Length: 156
Length: 379
Image 1 (cartoon, rainbow over the protein chains, first blue to last red):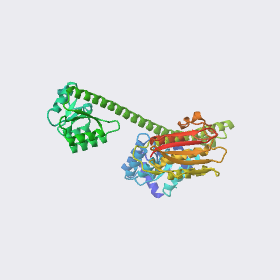
Image 2 (image 1 turned 135 degrees about the vertical axis):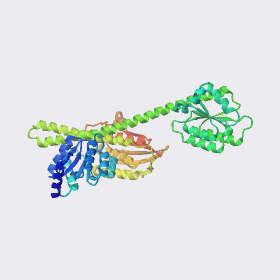
Image 3 (image 1 turned 60 degrees about the vertical axis):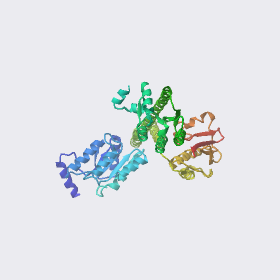
Image 4 (image 1 turned 45 degrees about the vertical axis):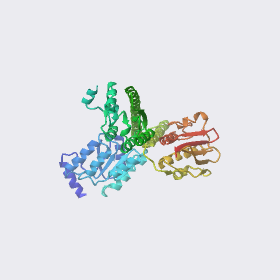
């Protein structure tokens, strides 16, 4: 906890648009799904902030900005939609896994697709988990459980 | 004409429309080239057999070869070339046979080629008019083949585009449909005080429409994927295993009093997932459209005329004659959604898979008499 506070102070002083709490990076262009995700986090009482970027290109520059600023507080997890504008989900995942500071964070991939080949490709690129976006509210809230499994103990 | 041709770098069209001449002895090659050039036909005189084969690979409309040039190596190479031609290609070959005293070895080899390809023999001495008319005919035939290739390429491309389109359309459609369904959930949970009974009923309609559309879209995706089978060789698959896998997936829907029997099935060159999918859809239909009698399904296979004929026979409600073809149409349904749920894509998927393996599928049926679905796959 102390360690976290120190990081918060640091990040406030930097220019980068880095949120001031331990946070998860959400790469999702669909506002309706971002809303549901925030609901799931609240419902499961997860102690994390959310930093949303709405396309793959922004996600990649965000990853690069964290790499370029060693004192900034990076995300502790990445939640990534596959079907994104500008740069695709797999491209973002590749960047994440090559990143200096974020290569090891859990990456949970969300998709509407049920394609087995897409799933295999995603896991091969280093995703930690795969969440098939469901069609009911109740099932969507399960993303909270998935997040809990991968968040550092202090946030879960 | 000839001069401009030699000055300009050959364009691919020139290459494809040229006639290769291999007649290393005497003046035949030059005489033929001269005669054809007068008629505006591009030619290339090959100095030896290996350049003939090399240039054939680069492209040519036809070739004229003097029999005495047909060494064993040359014939081997030409044979390899002829046998590896694309399906649209059947390159015309003209062999100038020796008049007077034929060499038995080259003569035999020339006739070996005759079995393999589109070969015409011209006996020497050949009159220029004969060479010209046969090469015109050869060129004309070859241009037809190019046209065929062009059409085939267009068709392949259009098909690929269409499949890509259907795939992305159905893939991308999933997202908004999902949101319609989920947000209907949220509305009915959180705003049920605000909405009256009719309002809630309408919301229920929105939700069930979204569910149905979701099923249709994922079925459509399944349909487009069923087609994306490359023409690569397929391993033998034991149809008994595919049937067993299909039955195990269907196990929960099979009524307790049903009898499902299968004769010993063969191994066929169809991927197991595809064969399983066909059995699953056909037997699934037999279960869904069963009559009042306890369900009986019989699966068997017969070999006939280069094909395996698989049949799945049931004692269900049957299909009226006028609908026998329609049932294979995509999203075609003969019943209301309430009576028999489903999107009407199962048989379309079966048809698509079977046709990809160069087989056919059809149904023999009458109302109240059960249905027999038959599909064929090459042995």
